[in-house]
Each structure stands twice: as C-alpha cells, then as structure tokens.
Image: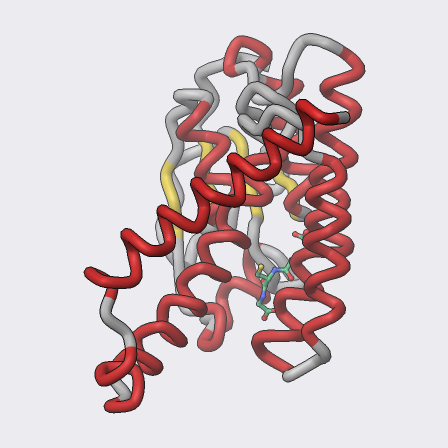
Length: 215
Ligand SMILES: N[C@@H](CCC(=O)N[C@@H](CS)C(=O)NCC(=O)O)C(=O)O
C-alpha cells in the first residue's frame, strides 16, 4: 500500500494519536457520540461505532458515503494493526517481534479489562475493586523501569493514554468539587503540607535504604 493514501478517520483520539505519531496525513469527521447523525449508520458504518477508517478515495465530507471499493475498517485494534502494517516506516509497533507481541497483549488488556472497568465504575457505579484489579493487571504488564507500555512508544500507548486521561479528568472534577467545599478550604493548606510530605517521604526512603543495606 502506498504511504500516501488519503485517510479519513471517523474520529477516535486513539487512532488519531497513532496517525499523529506516525506522521501519517489524515482528515477527520467527528460528531457527538450521544447524538450520532443518521447518515453515519445508514451510509458509512452500520454498527455506528467509532473509530472507522477509510483509506483512499476522494476527500469525504460529513454525510458522504465512502466509495465501496476503497479499503475501510472498523474495530480499534484492527485499525491500529492495519496502520502498523500499511505504514511500516511510521514505526507504530517496535521491530522486535517479542515487543510487538507485548504491545498487542497490552492493547488487549486495556480493551478487555481496563476500559470496561473504567466505564463500569465511573458511569455505572460498579464496585471500584473491578478498576483496581484492572489497574493491577496493567501495572503487571508494564516494564519495571517505566517508560512507555513496552519501553518505546507504540500503539499500546495510543490505546491506553485516552483512557488514562479520561480517568484523570474525572478525578480532576472530583478534586475541584471537593476543594470548593468549605471543609477542605479550612483544613487543606498545601503550603504547609508539602514540606512535611517531602520530609516524610525522605524519611521513609532513608528507612527503606537502611533496610536494604542490612539485608
Ligand atoms: N469493538 C469496537 C467498540 C467501538 C465502540 O464501542 N466505540 C464507542 C466509542 S469508544 C462508540 O462508538 N460509542 C458510541 C455508541 O456505542 O453509540 C472497537 O474496538 O472499535
């Protein structure tokens, strides 16, 4: 496949992240997921989910039907695999086959465990333990010395980052609402807490180092 085919992405941050990382030119068509236009289901993608990728053909406008003979795909993980194969120089997956396999494993863990648990906890009030278990699982897949999901940036990070950002955004809202309360305003003083926290952290780190030296 040419590395210069026109790409239209029915918007997904996760696919857009991979396209941006790979410097692959693309156009996007977006809409509110809670108010999807009828033409999307009728003319573009009957399951009416995003992402959906059209690779080639004329520039599309909202409401257009992509030409049927142009390659087009749904399903996030399949799209990312396709992009990694179709644009090898974009290096969306590491060249090392073991790391590629680990990236795929990580993507699956985010899709099958982390994202469903996130949605269930934040949007359906499911028990938080489900999310903790998913985070623990993800944590277990990460390399010990931090960095990206498999060391170098890969599609695994494109799959994970927007989930993580949604999570921190929701936590930020919790933080703002909590800090707007008089009780928090009267009891939380960052200027005095921060140096104490740093001293405690230094103390515990020193204790841990002492313990290691004795072992
Ligand atoms: N298995 C599909 C799931 C797609 C999916 O559920 N997408 C969500 C957004 S993340 C969506 O389109 N939601 C809108 C809806 O279901 O109406 C994939 O991996 O692409």
